[in-house]
Amino acid sequence: MLTKLNDWRSPDPNAQQNRVPGSLELATLKLISESNAKVTRIFDEEIGQLRGTYEAVHKRYLQQQLELEATQSELHRIRSLISATEAQRALRESEQRDLLALMHPVRRCPDDILREIFECVVRGFPNRKAALKESFHLSSVCRKWRAVAISTPFLWKRLNFDLRRPSDVLKHQQETLVSRIKSQAAEIQVGDIDYPSGGPLSACGLKMFPLIEHLMLVLSRPEGILPLLRPGSLFSAGRVRKVYIQSIPTPGIINALLPHPLPVGSNLLMQFPGLTSAMLNGLANITFQLTEVISTLTDLTIDNARQVLIGSILTYCPKLDSLKIKNATIAGISSPTPVVTSSLRYIELVAIEGETWMARASLPKLDTLVLFTDTTPASLAFISSHRSIKKLFCKNSPTDIVNIAPQLIELHALPPLQPLHTPSPPSQVALPSLRQLFVNMTASNHTITAQEFDTFVRTRCLRVDHPENLAKQPSHVPLRITFALPVNTQPQGWQQSKLYKESTRSEYTHPFYSGKVMRLTWPVKKT
Image 1 (cartoon, helix red, strand yellow):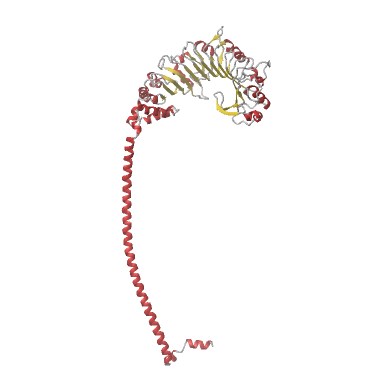
Image 2: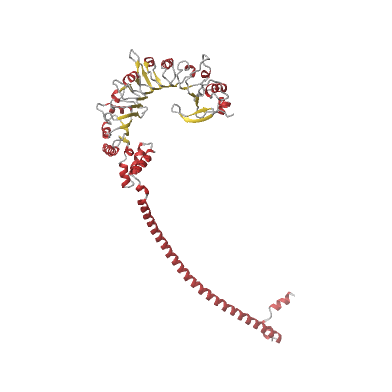
């Protein structure tokens, strides 16, 4: 079978040539030929149609490509027009803003109203440098604002002179500002004063200012006080009201120019005739003593001095109203007779040593005594002998106070509270005039029991018509109680009492305490 098939597929060529086709085979070949010719004609027709379609599509493509290029060109032209129009609009908008600025109501604002606005703006800057810088900004806006600002003395009254700057700069600053202050009282700070600072200090021209309400002198080191003690005042006579002199501490540096305590007092304060208030801070190597009468001084603060002769202060300051001495040793009064000062109303003593002067001082109008120091028998005797004291801050408990100062209306003390609601004898009321009590709880060892708290509140702090009140006298005036608590304190037992939870609590700051204090009040329940 395979042999026959191979023979059919591969006939003998010689036999094929010798073979004559029959009529049937010719008819078949003719049909195949005609079919192929017909298919060829169909292909030719399709090729012709496709070529026509291609030519039409290609022609339309070329036309659309030309239109696209024209459209892109038009887009580029319109984009350029948009950019040019936006630039013109921005220019017109800038011109419009300028026109509106010219027509703004603030330009029609009267000078006195504009002056009030400037003062309000500058008043918001507590720092002298920032306030003066803002004043210069206001005077640089336009010609009118400059004229108004320069004619407003309040804008230029707070000055700062830095002696590290050249003398000609300090002189120009003084000449510029003194003409703008006019008759206003100036507030001036002079910084970095050192012992050879006489020249730069003179360049500030402080004598040219008509009135200096507050003059702050910052010393670069303690011996910077020496230029202020030279003969001949650098300051205007009778025109300085308040002086604050502060020395920047320089730990570890030996003061070669001050090997011994420097006597300071009248030789310094007399440089400012008419002075009403003085504060000296950080002059650790001075002995403060007055030798001449300063009839205008009403407020004196001395912080961190070697020694203070308080007898000279009480003797030579006949109008002194407030005296504060901190971190110093107070020397005793050498006068054989007690020193009487009838003007002094406020004394504050902080971290002091020396108390012998208390027995020889008589202050008949002393109203407030603040003792930020451990109380001693001498200080208790001083409190007892001055029944004029109405406000007392001390580190004692009320136990030491109730019998020696019954006239108090305000007391800052330590627990316990029991002496205030269980007086001796029981028929009397402890501190009957007391209206405000501050309980200092800042130390961890100062505690109050819940029972003690409740008893005290029911006895002294509730109104007569309160149902829990134990003091039924019609004349009873409730005591206002305030607690000074540690910053990160945990609730104590007395804060879980019913009366504490019923109280209205309000927090505020007090100058005697570093943190906030909490005041308690008890409203009457409506039945």
